[in-house]
Length: 293
Image (cartoon, rainbow, N blue to C red; front, side, top):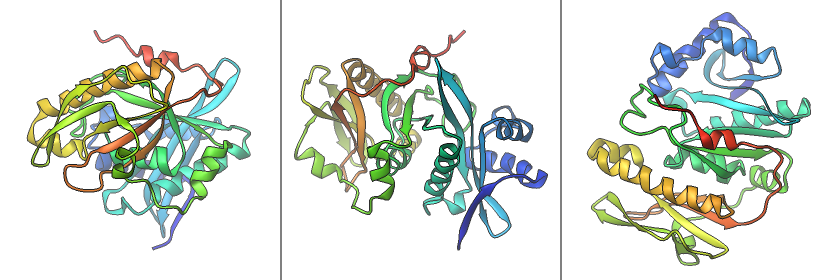
């Protein structure tokens, strides 16, 4: 299988994006971006790229231009790959092609949101692509009617991808093994703790006053599995980690690393470093969120 990334420019493939959104996330028509919106953004400075297996569109990435003060950036709104093609590196290919297209246009920043409790997304966004996080948005999309989100608030990390930073260039070229949770747990203090009942971790106490240069935050190995067993436990993880990230972000910490679970009763781990980074854009409106009526 040789996957090719190229612009989407046929009506058939534009409409295929509807099917990919429904299949990947279980979205209703209300949540599906119509192809007219996708193509309009693509013709006005945005990005609409497809992943093709031969003639077949099997995934896409879509984004549009945003502005903060005088700073232009791309907001990457949606990326989806059909389930049968997931976990094969296609998301990485789409993001790198998106990066190349933006650099050719003179744009050096891409931002997007993702659920901080989903480890697979964190591995791609933080470890493989080299993004960083310093903003947490509460329930930014409100109630979303799809199977992956029912019962949980739509809290999100706002990820910043500085396309020409040393960090990003090193990460996208690196062939080094990814860090493991156990390696970090041996070196750094953990902010929060969990009680394990078999494979089900329940969130316990948190320490919001650590002042180390580096701290670790645990999240469950698989949030979706927890939701199937006990939705109240999943909500507990959402609420406890919300407090942790908001507190440590206010104190100058930045998410710079992520390690996936490396065995039974081992959590996924975020690494937060206390560092000063240049502020090129103001994303405070994301933190403020929307008014829920």
